[in-house]
Every structure is written in C-alpha cells, then in structure tokens.
Length: 76
Ligand SMILES: [Zn+2]
Image (tube, rainbow, N blue to C red; front, side):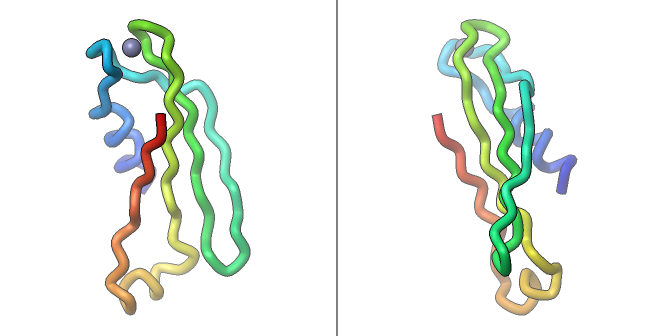
C-alpha cells in the first residue's frame, strides 16, 4: 500500500516535466470510513506544489466483500 503510494507519486509528472518530491504527509481519520493519507509534494523543477490523496480502507474485509477499488484522488 505504502509502496503503491510512493510509486504513484514517483510516476507522476508536473506540467513542466519534472517529478515531485514529498514534502509532508499526514493522515486524516474518518470514523467508520478508514483514513485518507494526504501527501503534499513539490515539483523539483518549477516548485509547483501538488497534493495527493490516498484512501486507506478501514478494514481489509470490506475491500474484498464489496470489491471496492481504492480510488486515488489527485488534485492540483
Ligand atoms: Zn514543475
């Protein structure tokens, strides 16, 4: 999960073509809905910031039962 997260960020590119470096990361807990890992990054090229949101399933069972894929929200 964590590896996927860093992979996603590592594969992302800024508009300028450079890659993002993680600046800070924090978790937001939503009771009963799991957590959202918020990762703030900055472009190593132009300095543009970008925030990634990763939904973390509350329990693994829910994931399998509902066949839910974890959405990855990417916001500029
Ligand atoms: Zn850039």
